[in-house]
Length: 607
Image 1 (cartoon, helix red, strand yellow):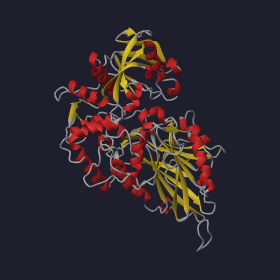
Image 2 (cartoon, helix red, strand yellow; image 1 turned 180 degrees about the vertical axis):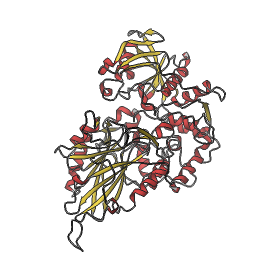
Image 3 (spheres, rainbow, N blue to C red; image 1 turned 60 degrees about the vertical axis):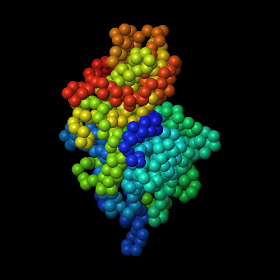
């Protein structure tokens, strides 16, 4: 989702540190009866020897993998499943060894099968992929036989030139090739970026669409990322690029495909919504009050031309299979498969061989869990082992100790235990006068990419936090900034958490110790922040006073809908967020006295 990287510096630094490194719907239920006969038609011919009128095309899709090749740890690796009695069960899921098995099993018996992704395949990745500029993930996606992907905002984390390298191949311009005698080949699948153009020429950055063909069956795929990508990626990542309206772009290219005789069209959109339930098997088309789906994708779906037959979405890391009416009022399937490879969506598109269009009334879709009790795909296991060997000298270094899980990504509360640890680490590292003199630190919640999990991930032992685990929590390696902000600007920033672009989906900043306030969720907009409750070390915020505020460079640029934080002056650039996080773990924990999860008592929430 949000937050953003300067991973080049990090990778350079950690690679240099490792001197010993050689080279471095409607129907959410089951598939329809006779699904095993997919591709053999629906018997619209009469008698023997007549060609069937329709064939079923299987569309497999997933989104927001974020380089999670190994199963994601802790609560971030679970999906919720509602049981028949109404209780909710957490199921451990994900990992490309299992995703590969799931997809390969699903394809059996489907002569017409296409696999598509909704963006954010790379970026904000764990160390195993992030250390190598996500080359391992592209290699894994090639082995998965991914046919096409939209770009997401994280595909721009390292800029347009690096995205082009992921597509076309070639070794990294600074770090070179990681494996002796092996040149990175790039993606076998096209990355689509229909709504991203170059500022200088006005031409698309990458292909806007592609057409999948088999035995006369043709399906067009148009890929877009969210128009607001520049608001959630560092300025360097989107330099020289322009991002256009999703609906207008898709409609434009749908007309172009239609003129070329491609009548079956799927849109891959890196933007999403929030279903009323977090369970993957929730019936999104339930008619009850408050049921269904909300968020940006609803208006986007309502505006996209009826020429488009189905929408594969992403970005919000939610699981849903919903129908949203198109501009003609007809229901149309909109799907998303959570994140980190924990789910995949199986959609049946019934293709009319005469009209060359999808029979929309026959579209069926369901999300399926990528369970960890199925066999691992051997080729993925060997890929993970190969890259882990290269990463090991860095990844396995202990950084500190914890007494229990410290939840970040897996916490749904506004104030997250791991958010407090990160903000405290930033304040402590930047409080000395010669380091910036910070009095308070803010951390954006989207930048916390995982939990700190007590259970050992490898041979390090329970409770040990390795460099790889710390990197997975803070993978962007943003440089820290300390700036002057007035009390009035500080209050405005807290109000921007719940107003403006963040009103519909609040982004609650994680705050360092000493800052306290009340968040009243019974109110609306900026009024949710009770201004006279905001205190720093027990004293009310003085609107006229200047405060020294620490935050990562992404927030200091006004990212994530916080323009007030972008107004800072007298900037001092400090160490990276990851360095400060690791320094804090080292200073505050030992094997005998591990760091305990902190209390979450800084933000008082009224609901």
